[in-house]
Length: 88
Image (tube, rainbow, N blue to C red; front, top):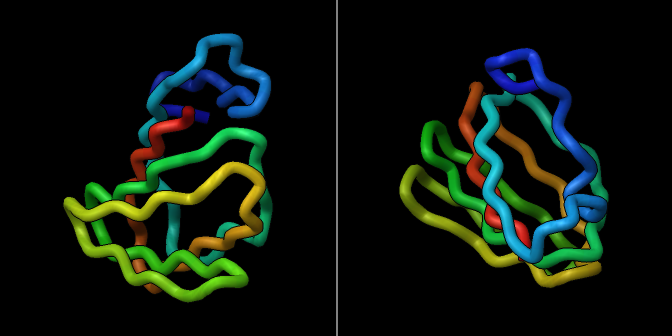
């Protein structure tokens, strides 16, 4: 849910060609998953680590990583963080 209590849609089913979502997460892992869309992930608060089969990226605030469509990835952080994702 977002701060207004709305449920987030599955990013692969949103009808527009591109959209942005910002969400706060507690410390821990977002388990490995993949999407049909590509996504640009940015940590606006906190530091996140993104793991794929190709490598491991540490993303400090105001930096981003591109995840190609269909790429299996997991995200982890030792502290709470805010993630901004651009889906295309």
